[in-house]
Length: 427
Ligand code: HEM
Picture 1 (tube, rainbow, N blue to C red):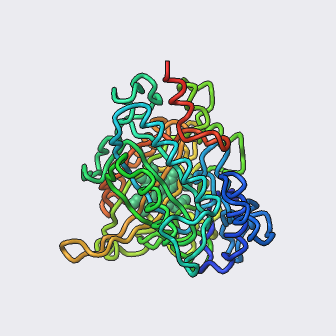
Picture 2: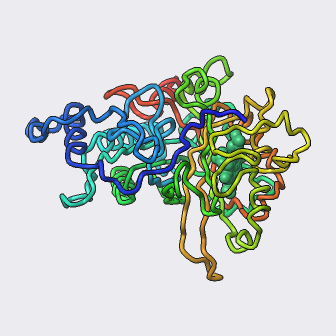
Picture 3: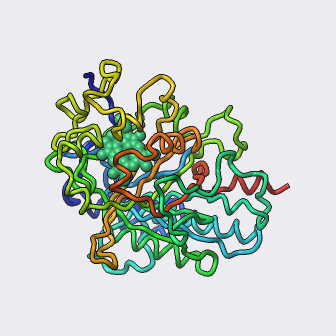
């Protein structure tokens, strides 16, 4: 077995000790510079370290997001950003009726997201003892296929592969928890930051959008080390494309010409959200050795079967019959590691959820599966088809989610989410 680079593979730090006043202060200074806040606000800020710079890995080896995640850029934040500990995923329907109001809506979302990402406190966060923003905040906005109907003149400008998420064979989708005109992914290092930010965005866009569904989620700490575990007890998020490689990102994550997409979509990415419920009771009855065959990895170490460490790559060429890693195991089906399957790899950025008990008194635990890719058909949908009726499917049920297209990043102070789409379709 050889070692491999594994993206966001390591487990989260405990607590948030590095968070502090300096971070908040530096964020406010940055925000003040760009948003016309009074010089007095900025002057009250002591000089701190550059808040955008990544602090590097934590003691536990987790890839920490920078204290202040840069809001402006070629791509939206929250995709390649090292995973923050907490996330809120929400989908909305747009209530405004015409293009001018849709532009106003996108601009409001941008203005508030820009300020909050820079460290301006959300409107409802008044008490100094509350965790400070920016808190490594990222806000990522996606557009659903339904936005490209005839309401706003966007029909004919839809990203080529964007459609409403279909029901796959093992799905049991609840329509109330699917789709939406817009998706908003909010990630931060504390759970209350997610709530404050969603409240703030809700207030700024009051009457313009209606919530459709929402799921709050989190990363578990790594136990005892390495990648964090999901609620089936397995290390999750070990293998991902190399986010440090621009070439790999241009090939797998970003819409990069020539790929037949509209010009405005360049630098964007398809977002797949899946709300996947776990059937923990049934899973717990399965012997660990069988569970390991279902995933193709050791439960304790996360190593692929036949290996010792989670960062080892399985070598399927030496195991053509699946004697070591079964042919129908999750990792082998998801990524057979052939030259042909290489182009279906994509970035996973998933979180766990805990929704209390259901009506039958069973715990409602699962995964907000979140994936980013250049082409949702070539990547997620192809992998999902390979996973059809996999042994794992008896223990999990996809119940909601959606396909969205995350437009390219907000370039500067003058720019806003989706500006290029709205300009290109103005004629
Ligand atoms: C309840 C649902 C799921 C669970 C519990 C789950 C769990 C896991 C675990 C434990 C691993 C091994 C560690 C790792 O590399 O991260 C893994 C790998 C992977 N999963 Fe899933 N997964 C789920 C759904 C999906 C879905 C829906 C897809 C895509 C359609 C997917 C795609 C992948 C991929 C691409 C890998 C990496 C395989 C490799 O490169 O070796 N998973 N998953």
